Image (tube, protein in one colour):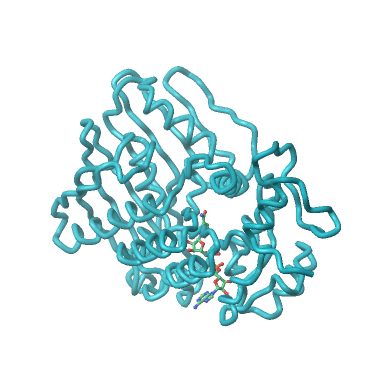
Length: 378
Ligand code: NAD
């Protein structure tokens, strides 16, 4: 049979010229109209650890615009289990060292990198060079320079890029973003946000190894506090100062344990964030000129819980955040809708992470930030 390129395939499916025999088991998007691609996008997960196993793969059974088409793993024993559970053909199973041959696989449209943080840049860049759209888990990378390298690789290869910021697709989060935008409770004056948990596992886990994690609580949970501080205030900060606290140095030998930081915003709001691997925290509270609103929990897998000074209790239908997130990205690719978590957002957060570490290194000195809006719509 003549080889069909992705472009030809998309054009033929759009015109309805490919029959079901040729298309085999590739799933279709229900209700697509003429002019839209009607193939569900095939996603390949890279790294089959805890997050892929318990969140991403199950949520890909709920997605409407994408499905789990392939896996990339270093663990031979996982291959058969995943293939059977998710109906993945042999030709869509890759190892880390033959990953680049994914360029030849027309069934994989998106590569989702779910590896330890220091491996994100390498695999995202390789995915982009293979012509695949990219989702990169948070934190996007372990330095701003790596974020730039990922963004450039995606631009050079004309593929789309998103960060795995599931909260950007969460309905509770989007409701409070609307409060901020529409000044439902007046001007935001003070934002408080916490993101942490108590780490108890083995000390040889990669999250406690700076060479793999890039840092401790700040890299792992801190990006949630940075994000909540920003969408709580409704704009990027103009300055930050930060402090670090260490109470279990024998356990946290290589990475930060607890960090607090304060942000200033151009609209007059200020924010205080706490992130920790030694204290629980999962909250956003916005104090405004005419009331307040709160999410607690604010960034766990859901459902999120929200209340306001009006006595409202927020309630939205439950769907896995990861399913909403991956569908948002698939719709961005298929229909040109807004990319709710672009690479620039991951890079912005890494600029702030680096400024926080610099402030700590300089004894809490304020660091000025020149972020502008970085093209991110709130
Ligand atoms: P994990 O330890 O459970 O899985 C990591 C995977 O990477 C494993 O399959 C492991 O075999 C593989 N791996 C390859 N090389 C490795 C190496 N040198 N050292 C260690 N593991 C190696 O981790 P996880 O919780 O699945 O996290 C993976 C990524 O997903 C991280 O970037 C993390 O920040 C992110 N994450 C995001 C969320 C979210 O809510 N968005 C939640 C959890 C994790």
